[in-house]
Structure formats: structure tokens, C-alpha cells
Length: 228
Image (cartoon, rainbow, N blue to C red):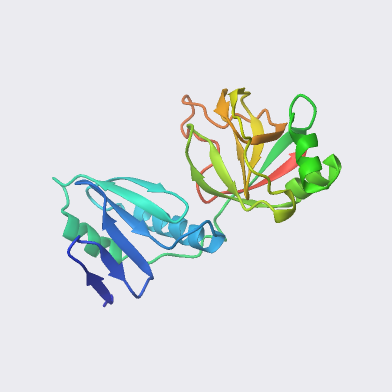
């Protein structure tokens, strides 16, 4: 039996699993696992998201994972809040390590494809080659998809090349641009405004509405960059 407590706002704390479930409007709940960007917390988010999807709970419409929490959208005409909470409490999560994909993304670093690479090198006291080597040697976790359709938030970037966003965002960032922002790196799926520091570019199409799975990367995937 789960050891849980419930307050007046109908949030539920599950002590056995170390998570809190919070009402999110009249047709969704948030399941929160912690605070801050951390791989171990995010893995628990994705393990829970997978467990919910596999359970195929009647009335659950969509599961949206983020850094530390996931939103579960449901049809209140098909399942009530209390019943949903009971079903969610009963789910068991598994270790995702054996099933997660590792996806290689080819990147052209520097030059016109990475106009901020030289500045990142200056800011970090490294050479441009060293910045590229450090960036490409890391395996990144896809924490979430957001901002733009198919935009992956990847981390954690090694501290040696962690740099802040631009003080003045660009009005146009080319599709496929690979950028840095703090301890995160990301890939622009389309031309859009943005303030991440651009160090390279890939030809891999991050988002295509004509594909069966429009987003090339999925939350919970792992990514490594290959210099070309």
C-alpha cells in the first residue's frame, strides 16, 4: 500500500516513490519528482512517462514529460481525478538504460555554420578545437522537447564549455543550428529567433510533420555529436 498524504488543494504526496501529484486545471495532473536540472530526476520522469503509456489507462489522452515533472492530460468524462491518481500510484517503473536509443548527429562546427564558436573559445579560455572536442565527447540526455516543434533540450554540457545565452538574441537562427546555453545544448528544428550561442549545424531534420513520428528525437533518448 502506498504511503501518501493529501492536502486541501488535492495534491498528493507519495512518500514511497518520492513524488507529488498536483491538479493541473480540470483535465490534467502534474507529477513532480524534484527540483533543478539533474539526469537522475529526469530519468525518473521518463520512466514514469513510459509506464503510463504502456498501461494504456482509459481516459488518459497525452503524457508530456519535462525536466522534473510530467503532465498527464485526461478526459474527465472517461476517468475522474481520484481514480486516475489511484491508477498512477499503482504503476511500477523500470530501468530505461537498456531500452534508450543513442543517436549520432553529424555536425559541421565553426565557420558560417557555427558563428559563435570562436567567441565561446575566447570566453572559456580554450581553442575552438578543444571546444568542439569537449562538446562532441559527451553523451547528452534529451530532457524534453519544447520551445519549437522538435527542439531538443540536451544536457548536461560539461562545465568547461558552459556559456550564457547571447545578451541580444538573433532574429533568425538557421535550421539545424547547434547551440549552447548554460549547461544545455540544443538543435534548432527550423529557422527562428533565438539566443543560444551557435557552434555548429546539422543537416538532420529535427521535425517533419509528414513523418509518422514528426520529432526526430524523443524525450529520454541519448545523443552524441559527430564532427564532420
